[in-house]
Length: 147
Ligand code: DQA
Image (cartoon, rainbow, N blue to C red):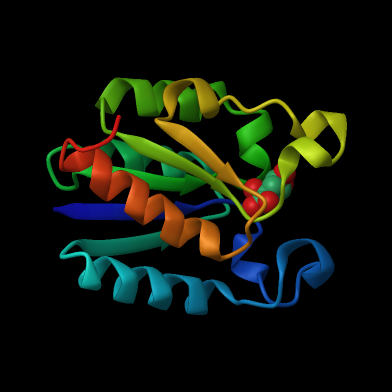
């Protein structure tokens, strides 16, 4: 099985961007640990980061037939993008939503997620580890052992 890990706007700056909120781990480190963790679980991983909503939408469309599941940290697009939500609905691929920070403990405008209603579930507040938890959750879903 194959998983696509998608990261949205400003996540290329992880490591130096507000480390007190998002941690000191860089995106390259997160992507490397996802690849290693998935390999241990017998899964393959592709990773993509973009600051552009349309590039993320194109990647979700292209994932259909190519990947079995998605992990998405849409950054601030989480709170605004009906287009990303519609793309996820359209491809009918299982998706786990990830955020490094606990968006529900932050500003009210971060409490709303357009991704959550079309995701299997949401993992937030556990930093870079959240991506690995998402891989475990997706693996269990894909093998039919968990919802
Ligand atoms: C984020 C939370 C969003 O509110 C924010 O805009 C981000 C990162 C997170 O991973 O905690 O860019 O998705």
